Image (cartoon, rainbow, N blue to C red):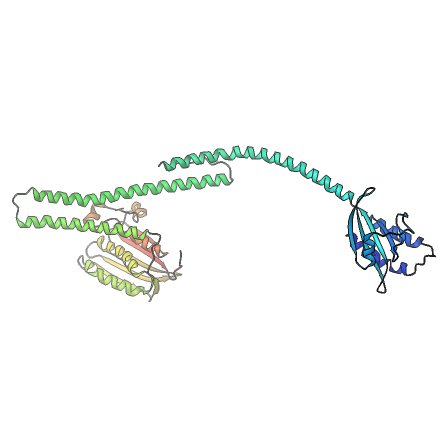
Amino acid sequence: MSLMAQGNIIADRIISPIQDFNESDDNEPLSDLLKRYSKEIRSRVMLINKDGMVISDSYDVLTGQKIDHLEVQEALEGRSNARLHNLKKYGRTIYVAVPVFLEGEIHGVVLISSSVEEIYGNITRTMKRFGLLSGLSVIITGFISFIFAKVISLPIEKLTDRINKMYQGNLEQKVEITGNDELSNLGTAFNLMTTKLALVEQQRKDFVANVSHELKTPLSAIKLLSESLLHQDQADVSTYREFLKDIDSEVDRLNKIIENLLRLVDLGKNSLELDYQVTYVNYLIENLIRSLKPLADKKSISISFIENEKIQIKLDQIKIQQALTNIISNGIKYTPEGGKVLVSLYSEYEDIVIKIEDNGIGIPKESLPHIFERFYRVDKARARSTGGTGLGLSISQQIIGLHQGSIHVESELGKGTVFYIRLPKSVVRGS
């Protein structure tokens, strides 16, 4: 508790004794009271009357003497105050003066003096210890930092070296991982990144090689056909027509490949915005089947639509129609004459499901994981004979993925294939 508060407490408690005090009476009870308070607060306590005379001094030194300290004068004017003095004998000492009020009038002053040298000494010793500890901490911290710098800098240097090698084009870089700290987490992330980059680079190379091959095949055929025509000095019109028909077919194939490649580039753009519109999926499928029916009729294939309910959701009509066209037309292409293609529409939990099944030639089990890869063909010779580019299913998968949906395929060789397309009933923006 502060000396000012102690002074106020003593001033309140001493009102009754001072009221009954008479200068001719024995001063011993009042002196004992002040000495008891002095021991409690470990400070010197004096009671001074309104004339500035010391009535009682807990140290029994200034009793009966007059004190004209500024603190006493201000207290006699009714203002409690405290000041720090630097005394030759006692060192730094604080004086606290509190007026004693009796029936609204000032009858005296309680003056407390307390040496603060011990406090300053404690502060000085604490500061010295703090300085010593700070210096020791700096030394220890510096030593630990030096050790850790060596431990940490070595893996960072290795990581930097691997990054520089990656910058030079060597993507197959790995760093050794030890421990389970932040650096090991960084190393793990780096290894994952390099693995992903190497995979992407390999995919890019494969894609370029596939595109080159796909474009080269029809170009080679066109060149061969045109050279054959040029080397025939005399040929009838029917021969020219036959060769030109083959060239026209190869040109159409080239155009189809280029259109699909441009479509893939468009679908791969991060900034691509889907044109969501409220769509009756039933009507969309009906219109699509109507447009593909002539293709099915050429092979006497039955194509039908089973709708269990009317379904209305938001989607990009043009792109979903494109995805479904690729899958349904594949079912028609790879189903023998007299076969059937069945499209079903129904709800399942929070999704709608479009099921496309045929009783065609089916897909080998080992080929199922790869059918959505670009330029992948189960049977290359058969695909070229039907005009396939190996891009249709990849495009369909990307479109469905952009709609936050999924596509799953089941097939058995010689029995047919079933595609399950799931689309969410509600669109989650920004996904």
